[in-house]
Structures are given as C-alpha cells and as structure tokens.
Amino acid sequence: MEIPDLQKYKDKFSKEGFIEKIQRIAKRAGVKLVYAALILYYSMESDKVSLKDKAIIIGALGYLISPLDIVPDAIPIAGLADDLTVLLFVINKIWNEVGDDVKDKAHSKLAQWFDEDEIKGADEIFADKDAEDPV
Image (cartoon, rainbow, N blue to C red):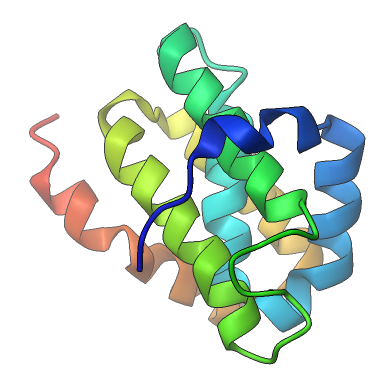
C-alpha cells in the first residue's frame, strides 16, 4: 500500500475532531489502531518530538479524521486498515522520540475504552520496538 501525501491532510486535523472520531470508532477500529493514534496524538505535546515530525503527525491524524481516505472507513476491516498503515508508518519514523510519558497517557486513555485483555494486544504492536530500545 502506498502512503498518501500526509501534508494534504494537515488541515483536516483538530483536537476536537480527533477525540470525537476516536471515541466513535474505538471498538470497531480496535485497540491497536486507537493506541497508535493516541501515541501520535500525545507525541505532539512532547518536547522530544521535532516540529518537522509534529507536522507529519498532524498530517497522519488528519488522514485518520478525514472522510476522504484511500479506502473509505465504511468498508468493514479494509476501511480502517489504510488508516492503521499510515499511523504505523509515522510511528516508525518517530519511535525514538516517544517517551514513557506519552505511552502512559495513551494507556490511561485506552483504559477508558477497552478492557485489560484488549490493552495487552496494544502492547504487542510495539513490543519489538521496545526490545530494540537500548535505554
């Protein structure tokens, strides 16, 4: 799958739009997509993330919010797969800048929408990245 030009979507992003969309699609999207989106959302508040990377994050979250996706969200399973692909692409770019505080905020928010077993699934999505971290 080709990653879209994320700069086209930066105007679609707003904090209110992000929270509204995530709350609406949380269960249908699944814990992994929501966790990835929250990691990016909270990374925007971090001093560790460069302005250039924050611009990419805003584009990715704008893409998530936008009803104009490569694969429309209304299509079961595939409709959110492109969103997850975009989010994971951006997370891979910024992962070394994601601090434990960001992960903790994302986990805290996940706990409002998912049960413990589901949240364990979210941890698996980045387990290999944490294993690579030399800290």
